[in-house]
Image 1 (tube, rainbow, N blue to C red):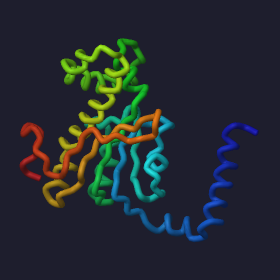
Image 2 (image 1 turned 30 degrees about the vertical axis):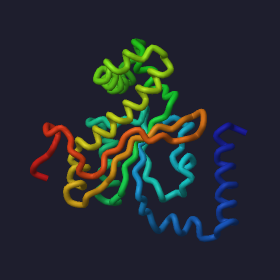
Image 3 (image 1 turned 90 degrees about the horizontal axis):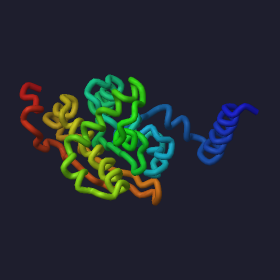
Length: 211
C-alpha cells in the first residue's frame, strides 16, 4: 500500500464512524458555515486549530502559513481576512503562534534559505529589529526564542489592525476582537499574550479617516 492510500482509507473509516455516530453530521455541515472565529495559525502540522481548541468543523475559519504571518502584500491572507470579516461576520480574529516555531527559529539565524524563504523570513527579522533592545537583554537562547515567538504574534495582530478591512468593521460594527495567542507544544496549552478589542487606538499614521 502506498503511503497516501492509507490517508484515503483512514478518511473512509472516519466518515463511516461520523455517520454511524450522527447520521445528520455531514448534511448539517454542507448547509451552513457561520463561524465566530478566524484563526491565523502556523502551517506546522503539530498545531491543528480544531483539535487544540476542541471545536467542531464549521466553528473556526482557518488560514495557515509559515510562522502565522500577516503580510500586507499577501493576497491569500487578505482575501481570507476580507471574506471572514466582511461576509462571515466573525467576531474574533486569532493569530496563534507556537513555541518551537521553525520559521521564527530560522529568522534568528543568518543562514541563506534561498530567495522565497528569505523574503518571507525577513518579515520576522523585522520583528526582531523592532524589539531588539528587549531581546538582546535575554541571555538564554531558548528564552529569547520563546519571547520572539510571542512578539511575532503581537506584531501580526498589530498588522491586522492596520488593514482597512479591520478598521472598517471596527467603525461600522464594533467587531472583531483581535487576539494574539501562543500554543505550547510541550503541554498543549494556549497562552494569550496580546489583544486588541474593537476600536483600539493605533498609530494615527495607519488609521483611515474616510472609510
